[in-house]
Length: 199
Image (cartoon, rainbow, N blue to C red; front, side, top):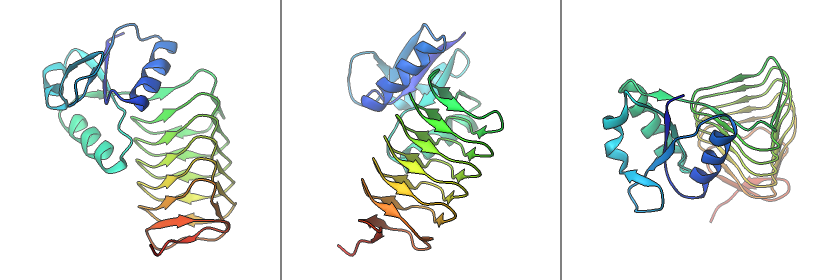
């Protein structure tokens, strides 16, 4: 197994490294523009390792994560998917490249995760859902059945999305919010039921 280089050495990167260790990587290092423990170079240094390492982008900001992952892919890098051994994943789930499924997460039948998605600790995505590329289902959030989540949307910690609704791209659903209807306008949604924040 190749060395794994994780782009991003903050908390999300450390979680990614723990998953990588559990699935068999023994040589793990970081690329980050800030000096931290385990960092061997900056993000711009990734090109030096294309032939010798696998890559995982552990950046919380969805737009930055998307930009870096797409740049790596265009350069021919091997961008891997990380799935924690304790995650429960139905046999007919599709998981995109560069996606992370964390400890205790549950993915139910006929669910599709795009590239660069994060399904975080103890989150669940029920049957027949689509989670768009570079979206994030946060810690303890629950997405009920037959939901479509657009690209780069963040479902906050402990939030709930009821069944049979769509959420457009580039939304942020606040922690603990409950989405009870289709959201067609990009923006920040808070509360129970979730409504578009005006300030």
